[in-house]
Length: 283
Length: 171
Image 1 (cartoon, each protein chain N blue to C red):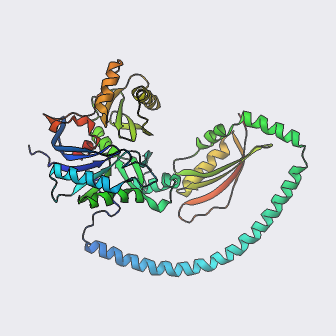
Image 2: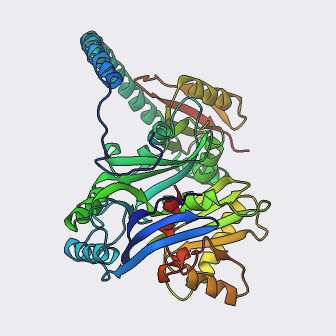
Image 3: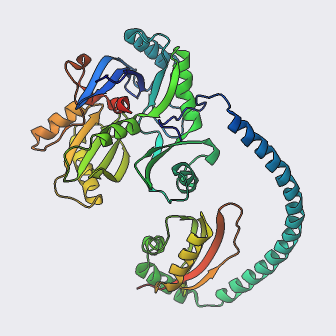
């Protein structure tokens, strides 16, 4: 069987820029290449309102270094912008309207910026249901500008949490009980509870890193599970920045959780579950 | 909708097809028609504005009269009653009871609570279509928690926008 073509991804977050080429492969992800370049503290600050790229020169330099390491060439990349900048909502969409139109009615009036500044796209979840996301246009333009400054061609632009969620929902795990997926970004995280392929709850929170964070995240998982109508020990999966550390911490405390996805083979020297954007590789 | 999400501010473009050009022509024709309709609507709007101004003056006079009457009530009694109502019907509970009656196609733009005798509510609502609004009104009128439901004038310019006044009866 022909293997899916690897696609190039460049992800930006508060702590680093990372990227690579990846493709879905059986039960895991085949990472063809991967690189990560750390950013200085405060160079990029994910926010829904304010300009995110605080020190454009520094971020552009990190992107140039990333492109060199990945040997990107002229191929356009899918830019992935971080969690913590979008208003996300799980909506039941009426039959006579598109998810985009319904999001304009339901979500946009509550945004703390003018409606015409909202860029909206959706993750369809089947008939009548969708995750919608609204991002401020000026925030996106900051990311596009810094990528252009670094000489990276833009194929399309997606949100890392939505890319991750779409990948996780394509592999919902063993049937039966409730699954809660934790998608970690540097500045924010998402919790998605689903059962039998149906997304029941989606929550989005800012991160508050510290020694106590694993316990608080475990409590958030429990709350999400209760909100989804099942407080009795859901199946928990984790992807994103710090996934391995969080999983180790939970296991040490007697909890059970597993990576949302694993690398196939050597995985280009990185654990796939640390890369939330890999969820977009099988789209 | 594209198969893949794209939040780009300048999404990738594709070449125009004959169908697109036909749509463009139809759009231009619609624009001319709408310009004509706009001119007619403008004249109607001027007339409506004059009527609105007259109504506004009458409303202000009525509000002034109401304030005058309220001021005659014993202030201590009013405060005691307000405290009692706030305990029996705290704003989150009133709001939760109201939201529970709302169809998904209706959203609240603003809510004003007037703690008095009785507890008055004025809500500005936006409905995506008239049938959802009618359903909301019907639920309000059938609810034992809300009474004296008085819908305001409706603006059906795109979405349906209106305000509703009612009173709340604590369970």
